[in-house]
Image (cartoon, rainbow, N blue to C red; front, side, top):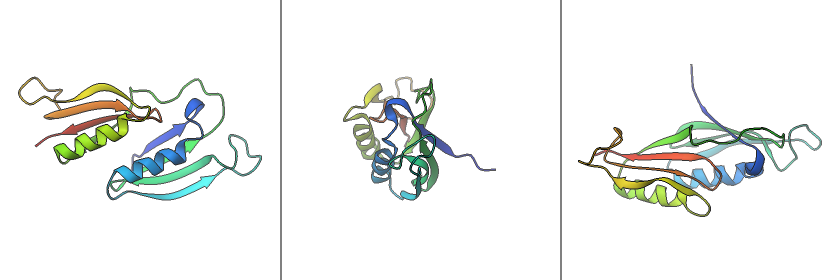
Length: 142
């Protein structure tokens, strides 16, 4: 059995999936876009510039993506997020700044929790939403 993150870009986020995966794969090491299949002209759910199905990796972890122009009553929610264990304070700082900038938002400021009642994850933690509406929890433990 394999469990994979699947991001569906709908509503205001529809049309931004390719931009998002290019952004994500540029931020994380050992990442790549493996495949992108776009809708055919006239195909239900999308137009030729939209991703029907795509596969990419973030630091070697496979993720899948799709987008469609159906009128869904849902989109991304902070209740489900990408959780990233960072390897250094510099890495967590850089990722947090990049993900929360240019239209993103900070939900829990990146702070050092060492000795001050952490969230139970580690010493430095922050939670943000990126410009595409995807939520990210970033954690660093020594």
